[in-house]
Length: 213
Image (cartoon, rainbow, N blue to C red; front, side, top):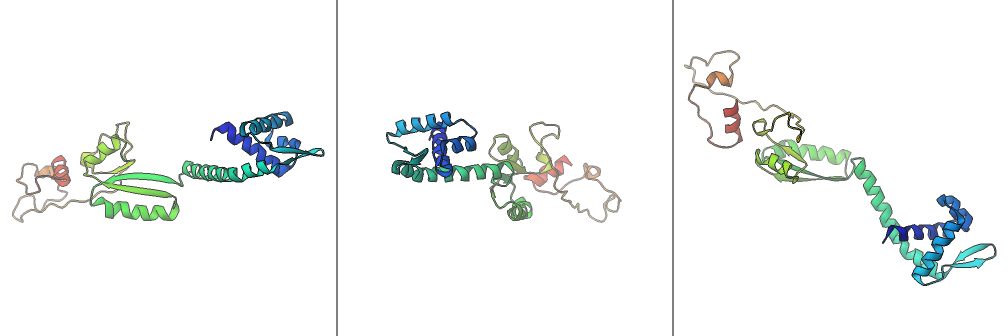
């Protein structure tokens, strides 16, 4: 339904509530002549008489009441839409699409969704499982709104296309034979072991993290 048609129906509904053209014009902050013109146009458009003279006032016809009865469903739907849009603007409604690697879903996403339901029940979350490196591709392509990934796969913090928020640091342990020279060293760094022979998975995010470290 066009906006101008809705406006005319609102005028007719207000006239039903206020009883006079003058009161309707005051309520809508317009002029009586503008109200009369809009209602005349609506009557011509619908092909029925909407008003009857009743002394110095006007009275709605049966046709007008029939039109308003059907128009109420439109008004109710518009009011619901306005309320939902207002909630959306306040961050209280809508959908958030999250891309996360498999171990992050139960550890980080699920607790966050539970907390969100308590504070923002109108917000729904759709989770898509993605490898750590794939999450940024999904984010760039607009397929997710939020990506949980690993630092080894993260773009530069200076990249204006992304906003990075560190969530946690996951410690990694290095096991050394007791007879190795560095086994008892204090403050050992992975870089100190760069020349050593390593045993770790040949693929996957943790291998990438180890190589980067």
